[in-house]
Length: 444
Image (cartoon, rainbow, N blue to C red; front, side):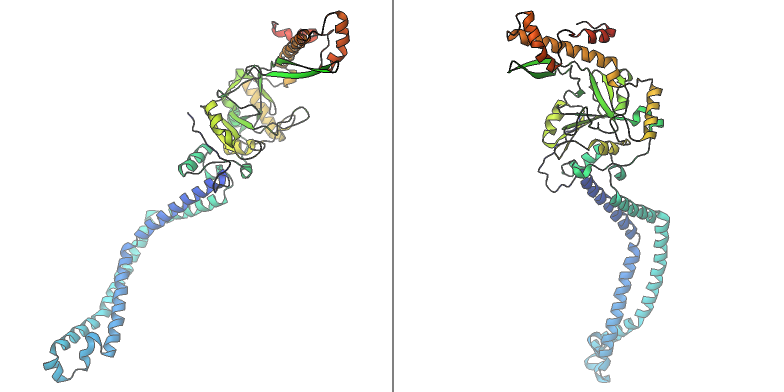
């Protein structure tokens, strides 16, 4: 089961997921550099020990020279008379003589130790040079610079999944916010990777469940409409028959005159390579559609409001779920899929804005022998229109009957102008749509 990424809107000391990961990676890189420098320093331990001894000797020489000059301490015997030296202060004078011998020996000892240090330094320097530690330190310093300059998880050489694990290990709550809407530029790989270079994106306002993108038909979605008849409002409901799931590739669908998805709360990212070819009704950059629903794979991601993460994860146990801060999921898909390793494109009403990318995209469809057709020109759409029209006709008739509005042909004639406001023509009914759609021998 994929781990739950619990997001809270009251995150403590959190700016955004990338910056938190960057700080942790920077600490890791700095720790590596510190360890390498500690290793390098250890190679000079013997030299440092010798230098400490040298410092002690030099300090001792300086101190003894001062005491000898002032005839203090061990050097008090310097001022003794011959009688004191031989009779009264003989022991103290002996201490002076020993100190004087030691004082005279110190320069030679210092010189010998200095030579020893010079040899030890040469040996340590050679050891450092041949160990490769300097190259490792240089690489570690470059790595720190790269981490500081990074602007994406990819530049930190970490996947979103591993980034989340890193944050959780450090007891930091991952969160996507406005700062995570930066796209990481990637090269085109459509010619070499084919479908594996495509990430299918689906935006929706119904919470995903069962690790599946269900069609409206599968979900049993009903549409309720209102109609005014003789100044009185009536309602009727009918089942939606859309049995296709619609996806844009490598970017979220763009809003246009026929639809607006800017306020959707859920964005699903599914590797296109993990959607079977037989499921794909048409492969288009802006509007790929499938025959029936799509099972989400273990590599799929659901981006949802922060306070819904646990619920979404429970409903989709085999999928990665990540929460975001903000009013909706608008603008998160392209940056996030670019972190997953895909090239982010710009989806318009009719396709990708990048001409070269789009040409390579269609060559994928050609190699995979996948249909390329607008949904409104497809047999699936014709079926949908006929079935929905039939359901609507039945629902309207049922409403008329249940409300005792039709008793004669005159009643129908009276109602016809009002029914036309909801697209229902008693005379035409569903005959023309049925003729078009019956290429699949639909049974109604």
